[in-house]
Length: 295
Image (cartoon, rainbow, N blue to C red; front, side, top):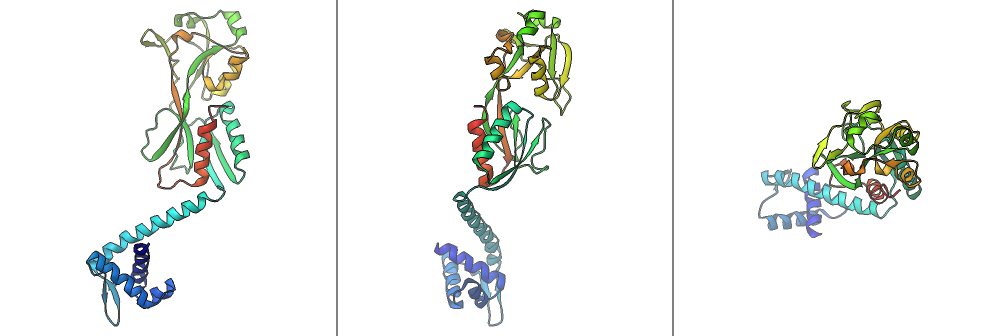
């Protein structure tokens, strides 16, 4: 603490070019300021100021030391502010981008709002690949491995893609027992909005991943319409397990070709890298980690 007070005194003298003015700002005597700076010079073994009856100016060593001291003091102040914020109720606005997955996202958002009423959420619900930093988002949820070195990442949990259809559809068209039979079925396909490419169905025979011949009935850039159409008996869709837990449990959907389906994926929370994470963002990240794949 004595070193920190010495740094504070040194910075004030350097900025005011006066021991008297530095003492006034620090509410101590000018002689106390002078002694503090002198002790620091003695410890460092260098002279930090040129002193005369008319002026106080930094030496070359003093100029180098000033820049480093300002950064040290800034870090100390930031750490103190972070601890003060931790003891207070998190509040303020958090701007996030989440995928269009109502079944997955909405219960978590509702629970978070109940748990943290002092935090205002600004939610962009979109399947497009947003630029977290350029567009000013505090955090985003994405699938796939994080690749942007400017971002921090936390894994929220894993999921699987499954081929599903309604019992009514399978009764009309028959249940496929081999990927080759998909040519005779109606395919409901997901298209990546950023590239326009169709998402491959994760099918394999043995150790070989295959591209079945699919009869495309519809392509869509979001999953919710595909889920609706699968439930309505229109065709077969490839959907993440978290979005169809209830329809599978109550029999409205049935998994097909499970022995030929091979997929694992992860959900990630990403946010701009920084040395301090605001409490309001920290509690959001923790809440999503604890709840998003448990709805």
